[in-house]
Image (cartoon, rainbow, N blue to C red):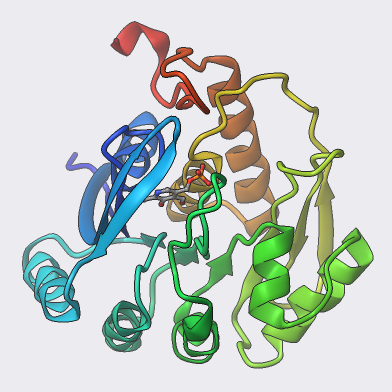
Length: 264
Ligand code: PLP
C-alpha cells in the first residue's frame, strides 16, 4: 500500500530543531510521506535565529503547483510564512483545494525573540489565510496578536478563540499552553465545544520547535481519521514523548527527539 502524502509549507531551520525538517521527521514518525514547500530560509542554531531570507512568492506558488500536479496532499501543515505575500499565495492555493485538513501554526516570532512574520501583515494573515484553515494552533501571545484581544487566562483564551471563529466558520482553535506555568491546552471547536487538555511540566531545555512538532503531529492524527479532541490528545502525547526523548544536542535550546532513539 502506498503511504499517505502530507505537506508542510514552512521555513527552513538548518539546525533541524524547527521548521520543515522537524515537520518531515514528525510526519515520518507517524508513518506518513512528507513533501515540503519552503517559504523562507533562516540562519539559526539551538542558540537562536540570526537572520532570515523570505522565498519569493512566485517561487512558492510554482512549488505548490508543481508538487500538486504530482503528489497531491491528504492534509497540509503551514508554519512560518515569512511574508504577507506568501500568505496570499497559500490562501489562493487553498481556495482551489479546500476539502482536506489544513493546520496553521501561526509562527510570528522565534522563542529567541526574532521576528519571523511582520506585525504589519497580521491583519492580512487573519483575513486572507485563516478562512481557508481548519485548525490553528496559537500559543497565548500569538492568539493575542491574531485576535487583537488580551490573553492572560483560559477564559480570555476562549473568548479570543471565539472572536477568530466569527470570521471563519470551519475553524477549530487549539490554544497551546506548553510555554505556560501550567501547560494546559485548550480546544475550541468550530461547533462551539470546549475541551481542556492538562499536561505535566517536563523539565528540559530541549524545547526548540515544540510548536512545529505539535502542529505536524496534529495534522498526522487528523489525516488518520481522528476526531478533533482525539487528534489534540495524540499530538500532545507525541510532543511530551519527544521532549522526554530529546537527544541533548547544542549549546542552547536543543531539538526534540522526534524519531525513535534507535533511528540515530
Ligand atoms: N524557525 C522556523 C523555520 C520555525 O518554523 C520556527 C517555529 O515554528 C522557529 C524557527 C521558532 O522555533 P522556536 O519557537 O522553538 O524557537
